[in-house]
Amino acid sequence: MKWKEIIKLKPTVVYGNIDATPFEVGYDASRLDMLNKHIQGLMDDGLIWSGSYCLWKNGKVFANAAVGNMAEEWQGRSKFLPDTLFELQSVGKIFTAVAILKLMEDGILYLGQPVREWIAEFDVDGFKDITIMQLLTHTSGICALEGTVVGDDRSWSDFIDEKNPKDSWLNAVVRAGLHAKPGEKWLYSIIGYSVLGEIIERATGMKAEDYIRDSIFVPCEMNKTHWRWQGTEELVARYNIANETDLQLLSNAKKSGWKELAKATYPTYDGIPETAGGQMSNCSEMIHFGKMLLRDGYYNGKRVIGRNALEYLWTNLLGEKVNDHTYGKNRPIMYGAGVPIYSKKVDLDKMLSENTIYHEGAGTCMFLVDREEDFVAMFQTSFKKEFDWNYRAVMGTASIIWSGIK
Image (tube, rainbow, N blue to C red; front, side, top):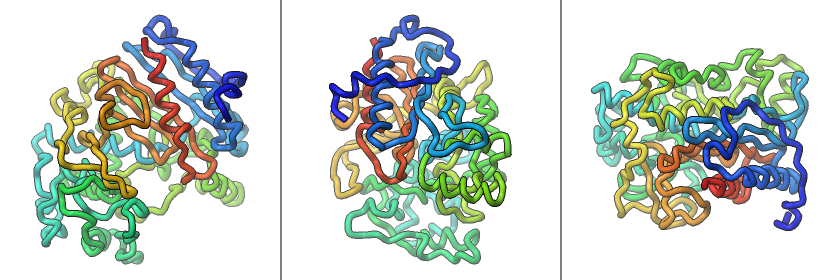
């Protein structure tokens, strides 16, 4: 759909609770009108079923809205509402990063620490020099996301013993070998965040998911945020039915009960920490988390993490010699502890404030935190087909949101 058609659209919008008007926080309300039309245009083009967003600036939520329908009615709900729960996908990696930073400030580990000091399987040639920081920044060289390394589709899961995943997965990661020398290239690795989850478990004596819930979700009052497999009947009733996989899960749920919809939407193995993503949440609860990040680690007077630890999110840990090599690219990238750092000099596919940190979730959603403008945004534009990534839905949505800052 072209621009002259988009601006004529009249979307039906469902509004949630807000604390202030856009004018009161210094935001151009006309850009929210453009944002709603943009989402409607994506729907009319058949790319997405729905879109939603929540925006917070200068201490107040000033926009909280949803547009569109679920792919299919579920427990009496057909419209996407502001409180509808959706899967965060890889946005959840930032929780893992903050959990690691919390353990560092508690003196348990440090970012330059070799992973082999926690995981003996890594004490072999090639792997012994990998550090926790390199896992956080996707520069460890271990198996990258399938399809992202041109000409090399190997997967660590090819080497796992599926009858005993808990005791074989770390050896499987090592057997798969490296895509690059540690510290040499930025290559997006999902399994690297599961390794971080294993470190969290060995450092805390708890399941990594429980540690993240108790130390981050609970103090941030993210009361509905959870991993899909933890879904209760009340929570599952609020799930978004967004794509082909969700529709299949819903079909199973109609035959076998609501717990079918609580199953993970992607393959998981018992015993492997689910710390690369997979949480269910909504836009407003993610704003709680962003508010904590911008208030020096405090949420409503409760300390979650210290300001010095959070500085690692906004510190480019890669220097100037490590480039992004995914999909055959070789371009500069700035990366903090678990998140990209936006720079107009190196990132030309969206328009944000300098040094905004963010994370995309499989093209389905994005979380962004802007210290300069005291601004947090969370939006979802889930594709009907999960892997049909589209610039307009992801980067275009972020650019529109940032265009309203006065």
